[in-house]
Image (cartoon, rainbow, N blue to C red; front, side, top):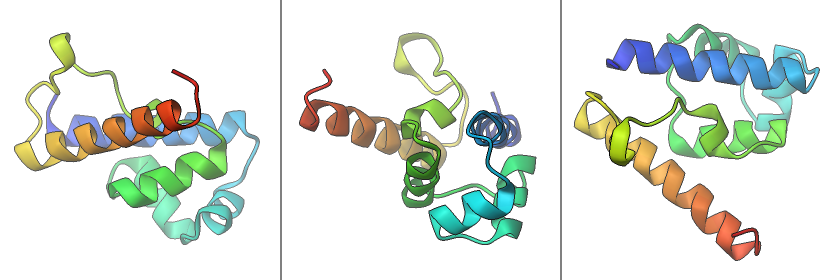
Length: 106
């Protein structure tokens, strides 16, 4: 999966979670402390949320940050993503796992 495909997949997952939560882009933006334009751009795959914003969006949607990321490749690899994106994905997944452990869910 290349960077553009990854960004588009994240956007689709954000949109699907927002629709399941029955939130408008405007309401999600307010709850996550972002602009509606940012949510629109993220959902279209033209703007990539950094890990902190991804976590805020996930919290507003009542999902785990990892739920907004596309599946990893075999063996926990991130396919052919650029190194900086692979590191960010790993960071979000690690933080989500730590939150689960800290909350006693693991």
